[in-house]
Image 1 (cartoon, rainbow, N blue to C red):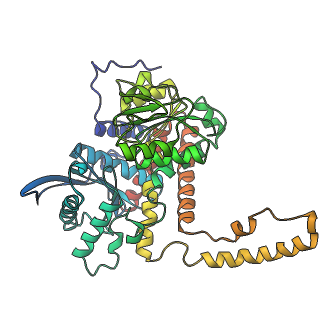
Image 2 (cartoon, one colour; image 1 turned 30 degrees about the vertical axis):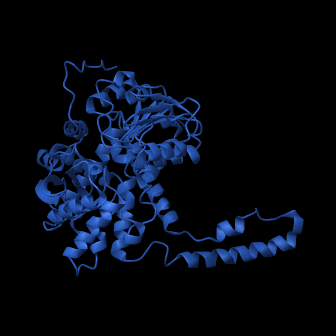
Image 3 (cartoon, rainbow, N blue to C red; image 1 turned 90 degrees about the vertical axis):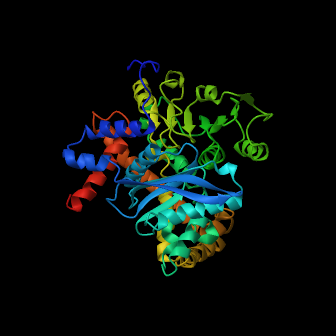
Length: 482
């Protein structure tokens, strides 16, 4: 087992360095020409913009970024985050992860990412709209927002509201572009969005875990057994991703959410927490402090280290690092956030036997459903509109025959209550989106798993994910003549 390095002696790698280290670890196992390997690894371009907006009687200057990591496929895809921590290195690392993530789930995009250095809570809604629209203007006029070249999406600090503003700003600048709605994804449903996009990343985490637990050999590697039912789960960050993942795992799969970590501390109860009740408390009180039905710890990091079956970091990068990796007791970690485990901590935990489902797979539900939304916008028709009633008509033929049989056999046989109504109903957009997401997460996991189990030099799912992704990107460049 690897000895844990002293964090006081060895410098913790930055987020960008961690991404590069993990890329290099996988690339060392491949036979790529040096020039092609470098082409895949480096970030193609980063645009930095500084713009002023007159607010509260004076001009405020904001700094934003849009990075394009790879254009092996276009458009490039990636979220825009609003946070005071945004910087060029972070945006470039996130853009690289988007390249690998899209390749892994076979979404036909290159990788991109954007960010605005701002605390969105410091501004009123109308002020934030003016700032967002100006940022969108600066990007769109350079084709860094464009349905065929660069398609943003929500990220930390942004959501449906901001995406609607960006889409409207693009449409104002491109009044004859019939595909203007496809310039951004994650929009509200009434503004060109798609059913299931808000829940998509959390739903993808659930589907990733469900697929993992379909393989007893993989479950045993995490020193677990059985199904998700009853598994003890700790979630770090009850935002959009963490909430939906925890909710689906608890209410649909029977998992027990024993810990929830937020900005103002953490809640812990080995008997289990009710996710919706905690969520309502946070919405009303601004945090978990004072929640009456669990043990509250002001230092959320201590709950991160509690004994559990599954740990889901769903907020910031680098929360599991050299300083706390030795105290992590989870059997498996699901990276719902981007880069929550640093390269140093990853190596230690891997050697310790902790199974890590990597971020580029675990949180790919967002970009997958964003892909569906982009296709919907380009086709100008919602999913299910053409075939739903035809499905119902075909189902009705079978039900009519079963009804005749039901009358003929009498009490000897009858259909299950509610079977008719459930079977007759054709799939709507939400059901089709969930079906597509489930299929995508299953296929991506199986591609990783095949590499993980077939190559003795691949010890973990993260390396397997990088190998699958890099090979697909390399194949695209080769096909283009590079």
